View 1 (tube, one colour):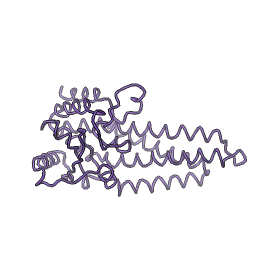
View 2: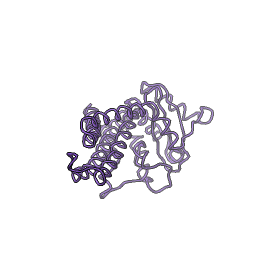
View 3: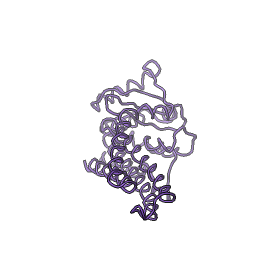
View 4: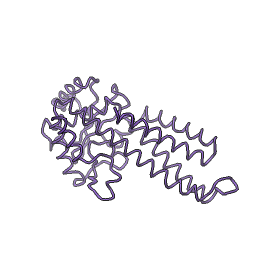
Length: 279
């Protein structure tokens, strides 16, 4: 519950950054335009995010005839989760990973990499699938699509703000060019931090509910260990744009300054929380 409230607050903060940039560029009118832009982007994310994700990852649908055991597993776990059975997709990618997308449980999609099916055993695959179904049930797939879209708009407007400050803005317009430049640097950084904070919060919730759906936290915990050990070591079709969708960051951010920009909580922490559930 606390994570859900936190996500709501962070979403408001992200939209506020976008509106502040609009105000800095065009006063009250600019703020209204920026708010309208946020609404339009959110609607676009609502309707088209699943199609864009499938296209970007080159995921392909797999039929019950092609993968009867996997379909049976998804159907069984979906019934436990209390949601309609989602569409099942496969990505030809040797990196073991999985993601979910779709704007609602009725339009959910679960996609697994071929590498995941080759490396994990059945309880571990069940744990991963249950985690992704938890994302669908919580509508995290829609939340993260909206977050990514608004964050992208913040970065785009910040670039425009920097150009405006250098070539167009001036004190005679009632704006301080130096302040605009500083804001154009700070705003995207803040948007990224908020985006990552929301992503991390949703992973914890999906781990918890996924363990409940699977009936045990051990399969998911063991799967996370294996996925973490291979992340960043095999070629992948994932991109920086889609990295936050996966159950494990496909590029393996293991420490140092890069840990500040993690799309996921540390795997050690996630496993520790899962083991606490079993106790």
